[in-house]
Amino acid sequence: MHRDSAGCITCPGTDFQHAFTRAMSCRDCGMRLMAVQDEAPKIRVALFATCLADLIRPQVALAAARLVEECGMEVHVPPQSCCGQPAYNSGEQDKTRTLAEVFVRQFEGYDYVVAPSGSCAAMVSVHYPRLFERDGESYRRCLEIGKRTWELSRFLVEVARLSPGTSADNRFEGLTIAYHDSCSGLRELGVRDQPRKLLSERCGIEIRELGNAEVCCGFGGTFCVKYPEISTRMVDNKLDGLDESGTDLLLGGDLGCLLNIAGRLRRKDSRIRVYHYAELLLNSDPGAGIGDSGGD
View 1 (cartoon, rainbow, N blue to C red):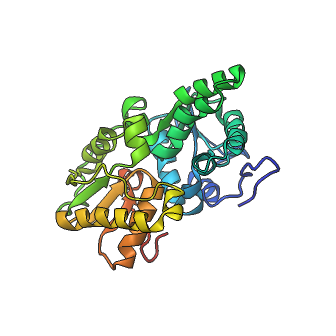
View 2: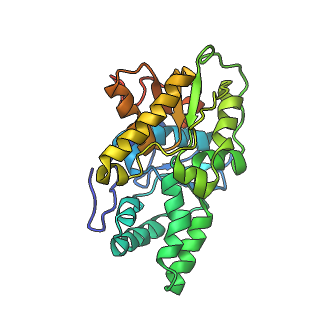
């Protein structure tokens, strides 16, 4: 990864940006992607790739870009840095404000900002304004960008109206598929039904609901580092729910949670595979799961 003096990712210095360039045939240093249409789309969407997608699972960000493009919108990947969530959760408010100011400058020129992560989207839309409550102009700018920042599944369902597809998909027939609702997306943004709706309409997937689907997996960002024993017990409780349901695939919308769960599954030699929901929505073989051999 390459960053400039402000801590911004420089183009094209990240795994995701390299993948985006190769797969989407971007044409300029701002990495602007235009749908192949008779007329250029009017809606400009900035993709916030997120740190974990960039560094560990870039195919998630690439899937997000393709899905938004499929809706006839113009996708951009501006230079970007961390949203500041780890610093914020560690009480480093001054450092978080610096990162927030960088983020706002990078993304405020677009119609929408979309992230394949509820926690990162919530950081921008919910927590940024709180950081600048005593700074009138910065507070206003944070409110404005917060209104235009969306978690991917909410955006695809409520704004972009992603097509359900035209052909039956039987790739997942006979598999028991569960979904983990991550805390920030569920509680701060109301993300629950949207990914289930997309998976049902595009992939024919009916989720086997877990009794503890809405219970924290124990990741919690820096929580799992500060309190590893508690975190391990929490993720083991999550795995117990998966085993009881006979789950074959586990889906979710936040890579932090999915990496935490997948890591524990691998340590227990579980057969359960883990994916971000966006990877399955493309109607193509998602390949190796998170944490699997040949995956990430």
